[in-house]
Image (cartoon, rainbow, N blue to C red; front, top):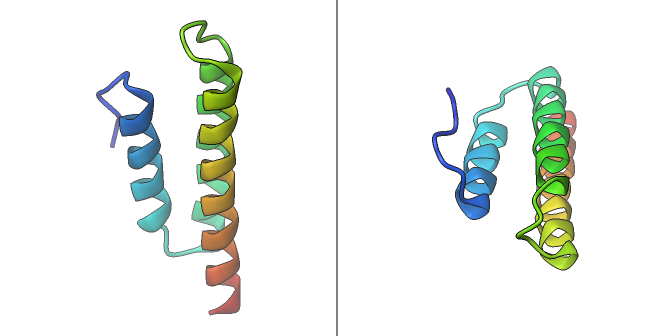
Amino acid sequence: MAAKSSIPTEIEEWIIKMIDSCTTVQQVVKCRKLIDLYIKKLSNETELSWQIRSHIRGNLINYYKEAKLKLIRN
C-alpha cells in the first residue's frame, strides 16, 4: 500500500492507518522505519515551519509508542 499524496496531514493519517493495521510488534517496528523516513523527508521541506514538522513528528512517534505498548500488553 502506498501513499498517493504529498499533503503532510494526509500522509500522517496514512501512516497512522498503517500502524493501526499492525497485528504484531515486529510490524509496528517496521512502521517506525516508515516514520523515520517520512520525518527525514519533512526535514527537507522548506515550506513547513520547524514547529509544524516537530508537531507531526511528535504525533507519529507517540502514536507508534502507544500502538507498540498495546501490542506488548496483549
